[in-house]
Amino acid sequence: MRYFITMSLLFVLTTISGQHLKKIDKKLNATFGKIDYWSSFSGYNEKINPSDSLENANDLFEKMLLEYTSSNSQTISYSFKDLADNGLKIVTSESGLFRIYSWDTSTGGTMHYYRNVFQYKEGTKVFSKTFERIRALPATNIGLASSGRPATGNFVQKKPQYRHTPKIS
Image (tube, rainbow, N blue to C red; front, side, top):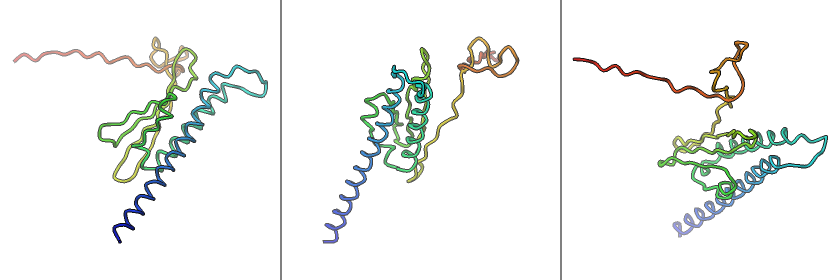
């Protein structure tokens, strides 16, 4: 009898948790859809700035993704199929302890700017982080504008050139 009650309770908790993940998926997907909406917005309204709205949609999605993935340990193994189908890239390590969520912000015009959320699991806890977005520096001007101050634009680093000098014995 005790076994039956324990198994029933476990089943109910698993079902509730699964429903909770589906709600999270649905909320994230709705917010993620706003990025596409504002990136393809073609209407005119002097009170609406689609670029600002697009940036705000990206900020909101990032904030929600950080919140959900850092507070629910099951998100590190949840498929988020609808989000993935709509363009969110999700890459999980073989161990299942590290995951990267990545999306095109649609803010770069002909260039593509991406945001990333990094999630990792340590014991029973999950953590999610982002790295501060770095504006890219022009490739021809490694880090300095003509004024001598740090340049803005795309950040491209030259690959270091190493020379190998063989040792002669």
